[in-house]
Length: 444
Image 1 (tube, rainbow, N blue to C red):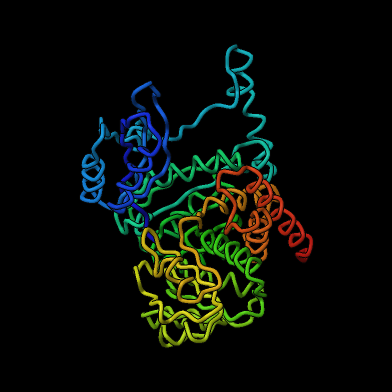
Image 2 (cartoon, one colour; image 1 turned 90 degrees about the horizontal axis):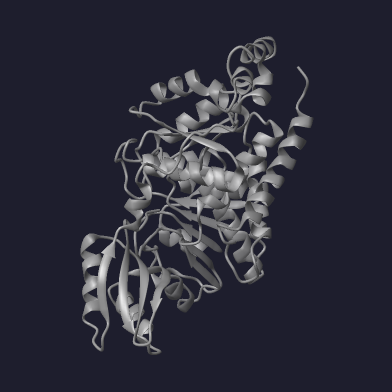
């Protein structure tokens, strides 16, 4: 899935008469711009000034949006175009701060020397106490090699740092977790795994982020086997959790029994394969997939899915269709069967638009604008850290998806990603499953 690359705030003045804001919105839409927030800055007797946030795919499209607005008459003006996104990132989005107020010598002696020596000895005698007497138990490493940054591709880990900072900010906001970005200058699986193994003791969990396919599969599998702390690749399992939640909601709206439905996945990259595994863990009896790469099809077979030979075959055979290819218009309207549920998740342009899919006979259709990983990863890690779990299992991830679906209002696909209740419920669901699984573990 890709993202719109340019976000700008356009300061527009319109006459204070009904209908003028609608003209501006229409002009933006005619240039294929996507409107975000609209903030009224000033209301006067003659004119109104607003900040209108617009998302565009390119500089050329942004220029077309501005020109479209400027072509309007009757006193509508573009005063300025500002880059609020760049300004918001000045100095970075995160920082490390002390939780202790150090104002006296007594404070200093308690926090640092000589008092800290006693705590060091406690941890030396019982290493598990580090989880309680340091920040380790509430800290997650956000690790990237920069090979699959958002929709930008292999731009390197340094250029991906703003994304990692964003993840850290979301961890803090929704789960109270300290996220520490770790930028790697290697994509070699052996080097990545060995580097993380050398630093893992300082963290309660590892979130692998924007690591490309296929090396992401080997890296995650090896780390999960070799580290005694939870590891999750967000582009795989975070995406899969929210996708499963969205499909559960869609099935509720259409009266479809998901576990008895035949589900088809178009595109078996990192997200696509994880979606297949998640749906099978949920209980879907027949999970099909299609991909241009034979290696991807073989991975699906290895996990118990059915590899099909073409998109046409998959569309003919499956009741629920999920697509994560990044190829606009890949699903043609004539491929759609009546009553299908279709989630074309590539952004900004889906494999088929919801309107086209419904017109062609789909019972329900949606694109990827609502399927946001932020609904999953903060609560998932909050739950496993609370439970002291050493791994993240598919049962925990299915519980997270179910919690997201249960927080979704009737008629919606997923809840609002900024709703704090969602993250609390996800954390509780994951923690319950983690504790139950830990109780069932054999005592060695």
